[in-house]
Image (cartoon, rainbow, N blue to C red; front, side):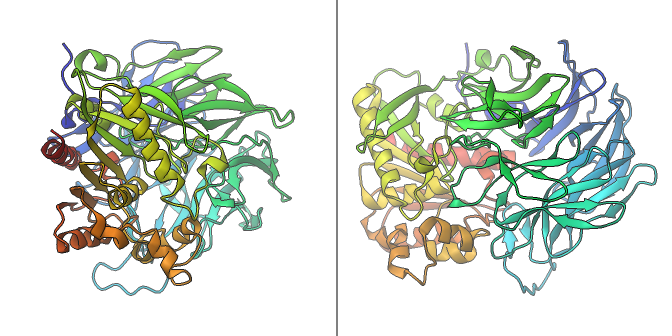
Length: 637
C-alpha cells in the first residue's frame, strides 16, 4: 500500500537536466540528480539514453557531474563537474568522456563556475561563460549599484564574460571584456563568430543587446538599439540571421516575450509571431535541478519554441517564411527543455502528479525513460483536481485543489505562488503532496498577475493587493461552497516571495485564516527598494513609482503599515542569504508583531537563499517543511 508523502521523500525523485542528442545515432545524454540527505547535497551522474528505446546506461558515477553536451561528431561528451572541489567550494571543471563510456578525462578547471557550455562545429573548441573578478573577502569598498545577487553573493566587482577553451592546449581565452555581463552566448555554424546577449546598463540591467563578435578579426557589432529585454540568442542554419526571445517592455516586466529575428550583419529586428502568451516556462515546481531551458532553436526551416498557456507549457514550431505557428506537443504537461535532431524532438516533461522524465516526439509522443516511474505505487501521490470560477468582475480564474484521503471536512491551506508573473499548473509540487498526506486540502489558483494567460491578465503593476487579493478571497469562497471537504472554519494561508507578500497582506486585512506561513516575503516596499538585488527597478516597475516620489502610496501597499490589525498567528520562514527578498523583510514584520503582542515566530536558515524551497540543502528543505507542518498542526488541528 502506498505510504504517506513525508518531507524527506523528495529524495526519491530523479531530477533531470536538459537533454543533449548525438548527431550520430540519436542517443540522448542527460544528467540524473538525486538529493542525498546523508551527504546533504544533490548528486548527479551522466546517463546515455537510446533514442530507439532500451535501457539507459550510466556513464559516470562520481555524483558530481552535470550538463552533458555531445560533440559535433557524436563520439564524445563534455560535462561540467565538481570533482576535486571541496563541498561548498567555488568553481567547477570540464571533463571529456567517450560517448560509449569509460574513464572521464579532465580538460580544464575554473575558479568560478563555467556555464552555457557549447561545442564549436569543428569539435576542437568549447564556448563557455564564467565570472571575472572577485569581491573582497574582508572589508568591502563598493562603487556601483548591484551590490549582491541572489545565489551569487556580492557581485559589485564581478562581471560575466565569454571564454573559448582549446581542447588541444587545454587553455581558455577570454573573448569578451568590459563593464558588462554576458547573459547568453552561441557559436555560429561556421565557428567564426559568437553572438551574445550583453547587459550593459547597471541601473537598468533588464535592457540588453545582441552583440556579434568576429573571432578572427576581433571586431564586435551591436545588432539592437538598447530598447529591448532579450533573454536568448541562436543562429539560423546559414548564419545569416539570429533568432531571439525578447520584448520592448510595452507593459514593463509583465510584457510577454516574442520570437524575433535580426540579420546577423545588422538591421532592424522583426517580430515573427503575436501569440498573447509567455514563451518561457514559469510554472512552479520544487522538483527541479536546473534542466529548464525555453530558448528557441532554429533547425532546418523551422524555429522551435515553448508557449506557456493556462497552466501548461507546450512546444510549437514556426517557419519564419510562412509565419503561422503550429502546436507540436500539447497536453496537460510542463515541457522543461528540448532539443531537435533529424526531425525528432527530444524533451523533458512533468505533470501535476508525475515528476520529470525524458520523451521523444516523432509524430507521436513516446516516453524514453522511467526514472520516476512507479512512484505512485510506493507514495500516496494525489492528483490535483482542476476547477474554474468567474471572479466578481467576470474574469475566468483557473484553480486546483489537492484533497487528502481523510473523509469529511479537513483543514484547508490556500497557497499563493511567487512572481507574481509565474503560474501554477501541470507541474509536480512535492510540498502540496506533503500537506495532503498530513490531512490538509490545498487550494492553489492563478490570480490576476499570473503568467500563462494574456498580458492584460498579468498586468497588476501599480495595483498590487487589489484585484489579485479579491481573486484569492473569492477562490476561498468558491472552494468552500463547491467542495464538501473544505473546512471554512479551519483555513490556513501560505506563500513565498510575492506569495509571502500576499500572505502578509491578507493577515492585515482579514482574520478569516486561523494560521499563516509567510515565506521569503516582502513586508515593506521602502526597504525592499534599497536592499533587494532587483529592488530599484523592480519596485518602480511594479509599484509605478520610486518610494520618495509617492511615499504614502508606497506605504499604503506595504503590509507593515497595517501590522496592528493582525489577529492570525503567523510563522515567518526566511533565508539569511536571500538577496532577492532580504531577511530584513521578515525581521521587521516579526519584530513589529511581537512589539504589539501578536503571535508570531521567525525561522531563519543560514547559508540559504531565495531558492531554499526548490534548491536548498536537502536537510534544510526537510526542516522547512517540518516547520510548516508544526505550525499548521498546532493551529488548524
